[in-house]
Image (cartoon, rainbow, N blue to C red; front, side):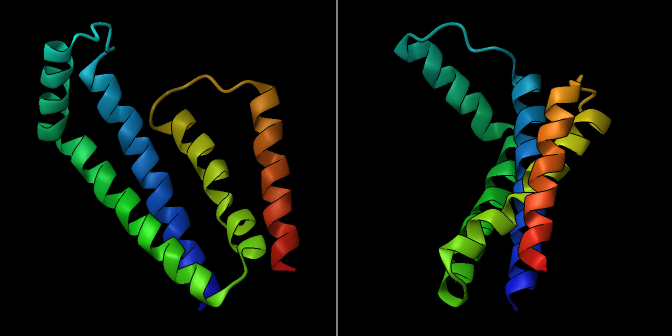
Length: 120
């Protein structure tokens, strides 16, 4: 049961954060921080389907994490769900066409090793 919850968290977090990055790229840079301008940005984001889907995914991830904490220790839950960092790095490269340095790939590999140690 614990690993099923971890899988749901990792999947929803990964999809949510990739959608969030895509949605904010589509939205554009926020460079005007006056109240009226911020209101327009928030209204535009509230209509952006990519951002809405991101929020839904992150909500599912949050409530699934709460469920995981009811059956597992936090010392297991937090490191196990870190697998999302590895998947996010891969999807950032493949879907968002981000340039990933070798240092970042090494970091993702170290995270993957840590998650593997938990599963042993």
